Image (cartoon, rainbow, N blue to C red; front, side, top):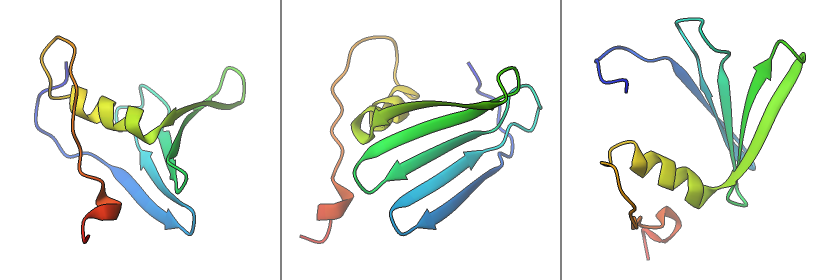
Length: 91
């Protein structure tokens, strides 16, 4: 597991209907990864594959993305996580 401290490179763009995050692999081991989070809570993760000369795409829900983010700091096991809905913060 990756634990050493270092600078990371990523970009964030906001479109009218989505947020787009690009994670750049500075080691040139893997192609960059693009995460597109749509207003409809669907998340697309895509990465270019030179072998097929196209992007490979998976889609997950925003809840699944939150699960993955929470799991990065979790020990082994099964968990329920609770996140505040940022859309309801000011209510």
